[in-house]
Image 1 (spheres, rainbow, N blue to C red):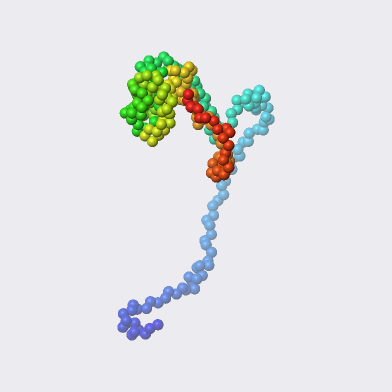
Image 2: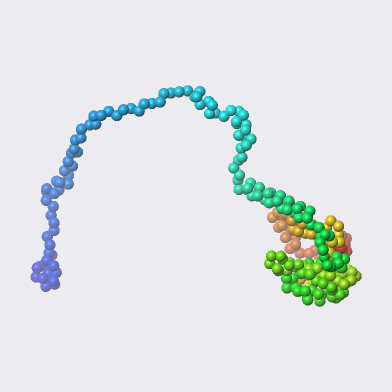
Length: 259
């Protein structure tokens, strides 16, 4: 330690004496704890619970199910429906409901009973129209084949937006036939239109596409392909053409599919 004169000069606090433990304090750390207080024992005896008498199972035989009850329960048993089974069931129910609705609409569909101002044998169906095509544009295209009497665009009942097809009525039937032969595939507003006669009132037992009829194949009737089949078709489409010229056998004249 520094001398007292040096500590005073430097302004340090005076030294403190270190605490010292006496022998009595050390012995107190090892002394045992005081004994527990004595308590007299409980003199009153607790009574034992009376046990129920042992019996046989004859009294409970009526609670068991009989053979008839087991067979009836087995017949009415319904296993827990798993998620894949539930999806299949819902799809089947929806398909059956759609078929019933389709049959009901088919039975109520009778275009011959409707009152139309246009002549069915002078009217032409024009489909695959652009939503930007208006009546003036379509009339200008159809007047190349004859005088146009009336044009009717089909619109959605709820939104009022065009549905992409219209009916064009000509003044003469010969003009309609000319347009039917030459206007199919014509490009209007960047889209190739589809032209057909009005089959709803001219063809017997005709049903439109929305009722399961129509022309051509729909996406529902196409067979589903597996991944391997799709990959094989893609490789075949991407394969380079052979240098040998393919034979013309099997090449037929393109007949109008809507005639």
